[in-house]
Image (cartoon, rainbow, N blue to C red; front, top):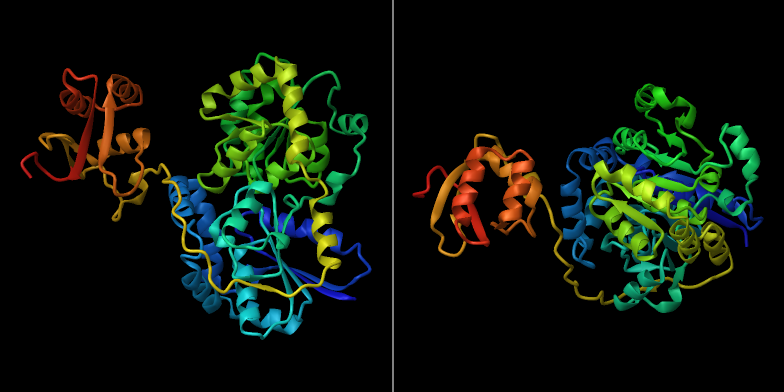
Length: 488
C-alpha cells in the first residue's frame, strides 16, 4: 500500500519537532510512502494561539519555572481537562482541521498532544479515515497525552506502558519504542577523525555542555564552574541559536581558550555525543534520549519543574546520570566523577538499558506493517489523584506579591500573633522554604532553618520575628496571613 503520511508536531519546545524530523527521515526511506508532510501544527493556527503555546511557554520556563511545574502537576489528572482543552484547541485551530481533512492521510503520527486531540476528534466525528499514532517525547507520561481514540501509542519505558494499561488502554496497542532520535545515532562514528576535526586530544576526557537549541540554559554559570575544575579535560560548548551567548562565552573562556570549543547551532550532535565523556545539560526528553542512544552519561543541571524533573528521576533511577542541585558544586561533582573511572564506566554501561538509537525505525516499521481499527475508550478511567508538588507560592499570588505588602506571622499551634513582616521578607521565606500546595499557610522552623535564612539574606526584622516564634523550642510551625497588624 502506498501511504500518505502526516507527521504533526508543535514548536512548543524543540523536542517535539526534533522527534518529528527523525521520523520523517526514516519514513522517506520506505517505498511504501507515496506522500509525506511534516507539519508544525501551530503554523495552521491563529497568532494569539501560537503565542500562547510557544512564546508564553518559553517565557514561563525562563521567568517562572516553578509556575510551570505547578501547572504540570495540577493538570496531570487523567481525562479531567480533556473536553475543555479540546474545545479550546478546535476553536483556534480551524485551518489545521481543514488541512488534515483535505490531505486525507492514511497514517497520522503526532509528537505532541495538541494535534493528537484534534485528529482524535475528527475520528470520533467520522470525518477522517486515518490511523492515529501518538509518540510521546518524554520518559514520563503526562495526562495531556491521553486520547480516547487512537491506533497505537509509542512510549519510552516499560513503566509508562504499565501506567497506560492501568488507565484502561489495551496492552497490544502500546509499543515500548523509546523516544525517536535522528537515525544518524544508529550509524558508526570514526572517533579519531571526529576528534581531529574539532582539534581535540584523544588522551583527555571531553565534556559536552549543551545550552539547548534556543541557548537558554545556565551555560554561563556552568562554564564558570568548569573553569575551576582540577581534572585536566577539554570542553565543547553548544550554544544553540543564541549568538549573544556564544560571543559572551568565547570571551569568558579566553584565559583557557585552548581547552574550549564554543559552537553555535550544530547538526553534528550525534558525533559530538559519541566522542564526549560526559554530557552536562538540562534533561529534556530529546536531549536525554540522544545522550542515551550515544551511550553518554549525564550531569543534570537546572531541570525545568515538571517534565524535566520527571525525566531526571528516571535517568537517576537507571544510574545513567548525576544531578547537580547547586551550580556552585558543579566543578566538584564533575571532578569526582572523572576521578572515579569505574563509576563512569558503570554509568556508560547502564545507558544500554535505556538507550534506543533505533526508536524512529521501530516506530516507522510498526506503522507501515500493521492495519488495525482505532481503539475507542467508551468509559475513560476516573481521575487519579497525583502526589503534591513542592511549588513556590510567591509565583502564584494574584495580584503579584509586592515588596510593601504586609503579613502577620503567628504561632501555628496557638494562633498567637508574633509580628508583622513585609512582602519582600515573605518572598525570602517562599524562595527558600517552599510549601506543599497553594492552600498551605504554614512554615516549619528549626535552628538550621534560621541559619539558612540568615545566610541567604533574610533581614534582621524577619529573623527576629522567627526567633521569637521559635523561642526556647528546637522546632515549631508558624502560620502566615495577609494583614497590617498583629491585632487583625
